[in-house]
Length: 428
Image 1 (spheres, one colour):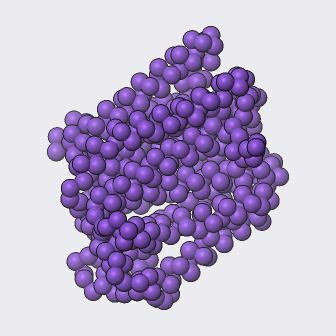
Image 2 (cartoon, rainbow, N blue to C red):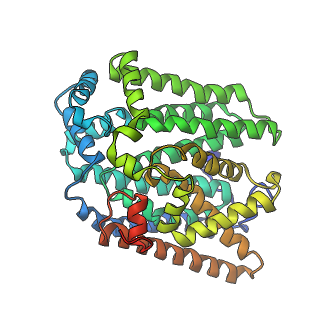
Image 3 (cartoon, rainbow, N blue to C red):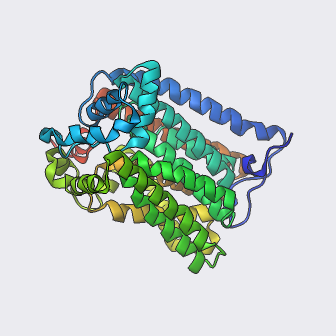
């Protein structure tokens, strides 16, 4: 029985819309991408599992998540507002992680009821989410850019020091990234299909859940909608803006209703929003580690993955200045808009690079595309051999960076001060 079109990879990727990155594949050759992703997932899981041994105790956010999860081991979901009463009745906790993330807390509470609560549970969920993200990155990018670019980008995502660090920790960033990847994949598929109803409905459903995983995720509405406007008015694509407006707006209203329900009332939600907006001044840790110039995030990515980030910056400059945007595929135009817009949005916010780990996806895609552009004139067999060797080398460098920073140095939260210290850029 043939697969539906949505689950097929292109046998030939050619022309400016797809970047021209693949030759025609023989029937036998169609099997290698599936074997490649299976081997990649097994390798990453095998290398990352020992990193879970460092999850003995946790501090900061993870302690609060553990408390919230344990709360629902006995209490029903209808008791959610009482969790906020407990939070506000303990002034020493004000400014730290609030229970405003039901999309993370409730599923983990359900898992904890089945297999028992622990920091190990949260770390295992993070690792499973990371492997799921790698699989989604491979699936969608193989559809958009061909199997070679898809598998290479998935490999770089798999070995990202930042993503591996969050995958072996009891923090929620890897879990959040998984739903971001799913949202982004469905959104771009909807754009490519010019607003197909089923894809928009699937995107809207996932996006609604994504909005209650972490409250900051509402900021993603901005780059998504800006891209729709860009495609419609600058690229002259026949996008039905009304449909996309509903697909982006309706989940926001559903998430708003969910937030009102868990806080108990609109006034309860307003109270927590005011607290979240003042967290930079009320939380001493955030005040000391999350503020800085807008380019602090770029410095963090450079300290985590110097070679990969430099190559990605080169491709970004090449794509923006050297190529007409009409010659780029829709997913590349999306990421070229998404990356700077998200950097601008987060520039004034007191956040560390963990909150922008989603930028690892375009960074790694741009890196792969730069290598491919660089090797374009090399002979066919030699080009793919060199390409594979360079990607494998970058994976090795990134894994070495993860091992040094997160395992050997036992880095828990990748704040700028710690990253600069462990890279011997500052002394203390």
